[in-house]
Amino acid sequence: MAVTIQEVKTGKQLTEFIRFPETLYKDNPYYVPSLEFDVRDTLSPKRNPAYEFCEAGLYLAYKDGRCAGRVAAIINRRANEEWKHQEVRFGWYDFIDDQEVSKALMDKVEEFGRNRGMDTIVGPLGFTDFDPEGMLVDGYDRLCTMALIYNHPYYVKHVEEMGFEKDNDWIEFRIDFRGGLPEKITRVASIVEKRSKCHVRPLTKKMLREEKYGYKVFDLINECYKDLYNFTILPEKLVKKYMDFYLGLLPLKYVSCIENEKGELVSFGIIMPSLARALQKTRGKLLPFGWYTLAKAMYWKYDDTLEMLLVGVRPDYRDSGINSLLFTDLFQRAVKDGFQFAETNAIMETNNKNIAQWTIFPGECKKRRRSYIKKLQPLSE
View (cartoon, rainbow, N blue to C red):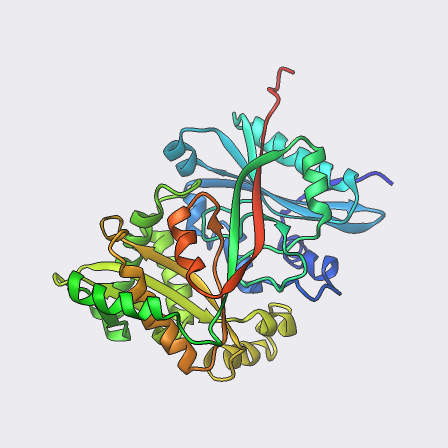
């Protein structure tokens, strides 16, 4: 039976789009579901401020009367202007092991892009860098993290047979704390604290309320990440959305802020207890009792692993060793709470300074993910 493609237009279709991976990865022990309400908010034009500068189409594929795949086509006009290209992105790309299905979905993304004047297709990417990105190309036998994508190995063959080539790779590290922090880190931290006159300032709700400290963190995110691959400078409405989600969800003791003697924020780190196992148990749903399972994993019955969500150092402090002060603060607290491992977020393989700071710790580089790119054929052809 031929593949049919339907654009998501109704709430029922959106639910089917969001929940399709539940079937595709039903028996996979490494797949971690996303928080369903967060995905719904991200994909909804009424709830996601990114739609103010993005245009998107969501599509479902059907074969033999069943849902067989999904994809989002996204044009981020702000990123296209900042990076001076004309790209359509594909994201939330999942499909059964059927080339007819995967190609029909990608054809729809290409059509979406060509009709709007785009000349290149790239992905997997989301609306912004805070959405899941990068197709897993190595590490299929490792538990995924909450913030990143898991996919079947056959995805790579499908996209490469469609003519896609590597555009960018990210790698991830698994850090081992069981032997304590490396002596080099704590020694350098002591020296840096005295030399730089910088200090740790614990984040409090009062700081968030009275000093609008969350905006300071996101201003530094924009400054730190602006030159990284396809990064979108975050406007205020989107900052508020992310700030409400992350800083509203996380225990503040796992947010570390480093200030200089002038009281300026020069570095930050945000970690969290891993919710991977809890999300597997709840299938990403809060109701009826998923909220309790997730809250328990976040606040009082931790897994042995934490996730490094975000780390940033102001550009003029990058060679100062300030990251040692940050890591000492975060990881000593984590070890005291019983954590044994940490999973880094995805790091660009060309970001040598970022990679070097993780190689100091015992651990391993355990996963690699990739964005793919392909030129679009003009409509006239």
